[in-house]
Length: 292
Ligand code: DGL
Image 1 (cartoon, helix red, strand yellow):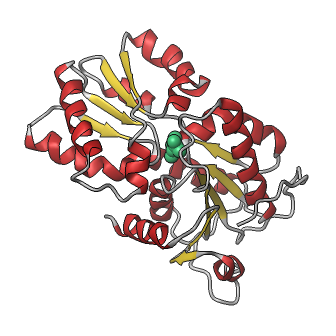
Image 2 (image 1 turned 180 degrees about the vertical axis):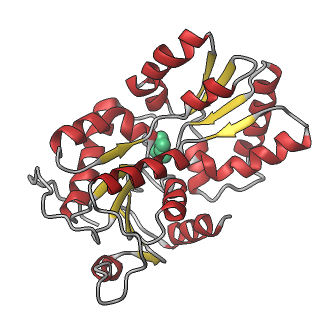
């Protein structure tokens, strides 16, 4: 799909039945979409995955900013009523820029769920699993300075570059990445970590994998992410702007059909677009969306 840069700086002609736009470097943002779908079941969703450039996490900050703005430009061009940058790495380096460029569109970004982790930690030791771009970004480090440090909570940061490609590949359980992840979980536990924050939107897809190990070894540990909080935030913003769809739309009133027709993949209320699309991606998306 070709991505054009647009000069549109306002989005005043949005209507309530316009879609909610979501963007991630790849399939990770689908973990946020699953929460949105539960909290806002009558909305239409337009998802853009920049699979041509995934992973973002070890890219240069300026490159991430440019790719993020490009994606947000496209979602605004499609007249999305609200945009979720469903990627912690893209939010770390593109959220402020996107908000400055489009002051009339609500733009929601992600930051690892460190605040609840600090609140619930009994051992005062939490771990954040995220990409290098997120771990070095101001969004997370401001939360560490403002919330973790004043509460004497120690934050252990961990980035494993193979995790995102592993999720994009459908999480084969026999891979070395699966073994490494299990090993690291035990290491965190032995260090006294009792809250594990999944600070990348790809990671909630392996939460069940981690929880199986947590339960098997009776570890006193929570594994958390920010998906549900983001969905609630989106609901609040739409309510405030009178843009919430509260009832199922009839075929006459819905204007989703246009995006559905053009989408590379259409699943329920989701119209999925990717900068690089193939059958393998189709299978991964379908499988992740059917994961309970
Ligand atoms: N889902 C992105 C995030 O939340 C993935 C990062 C990547 O592409 O490396 O950070």
